[in-house]
Image: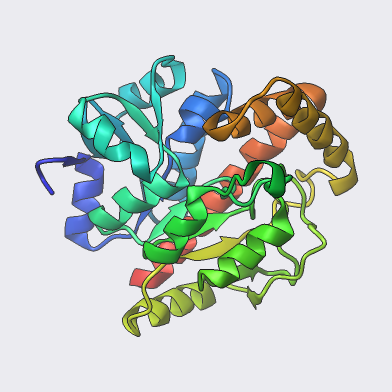
Amino acid sequence: MSDYIDIAPEVAEAFAAGKPVVALESTIISHGMPYPQNLETARAVEQDVRDNGAIPATIAVIGGRCKIGLSPEELEYFAKGTDILKLSRRDIPYCLAKKLDGATTVSATMILAEKAGIRVFATGGIGGVHRDLAGNFDVSADLTELGKTSVAVVCAGAKAILDIPKTLEHLETLGVPVIAYGTDEFPAFYSVESGQKAPLRLDTPEELAAFLNSKWEFGLEGGAVIGNPPEADKALAREAIEGAIEDALMEAKEKGIQGRDVTPFLLARVTELTKGKSLEANIALVRNNARLGAKIAAAMVG
């Protein structure tokens, strides 16, 4: 894989020493948040991982090279860049062949993390089944990837703009374990509650680490979703955010926004409609997930 992958020195040293490493995605930086909050968040999330016993590896593609860990200058480039591809599984070969720059979504980050030997990935929320499925048949590639790629994704559930019940049903069909951390209810990204009972519940990083080690040691390939509810004092009430989401969805439909452009548009519009409260909640939950991801990764090798 050396023909395609570059391992950052800090990450390579961690691998050599047997230290835990946590993968982080780059689409949050380039497409998920505005500047400068995206850069501030990227730096803070990496430090959160370090502070909780692991080494961060933010993943991206630069000049056709898969980067497992970004330098401070590369983080800033992705935060300010305007011509960066948004990479899912299908886009990786194009980006490599054309030697372009690309930010990895959940699915692409999982692929590159697994190739580098990283088992734990912390992000904001996974993609899933979009609302009005009958009208657009929009199902995120994240779900398919979770069914085949052996990386655990620590998230605040599925993004609130999605159809959470259908997303959970699809994950069940794919055989993906869905575990809520310290709660019986699957979280709803900005909100602690979704109204949906989680299939499984575990209460400590050590229990989660034992679950993941058992799954893969037994030979069950594929990922796992670890739903980590946002901190209660930084979460948004479900009722408060739902109105903004519905308004943003209607605008997206009226403007004919489709495919990969839907999620960035909706997140940005919800931020505007909530006067920045959703962005604050998003930043807080990403950092919360990074802290848990680091604790799980440390427990897996400890």
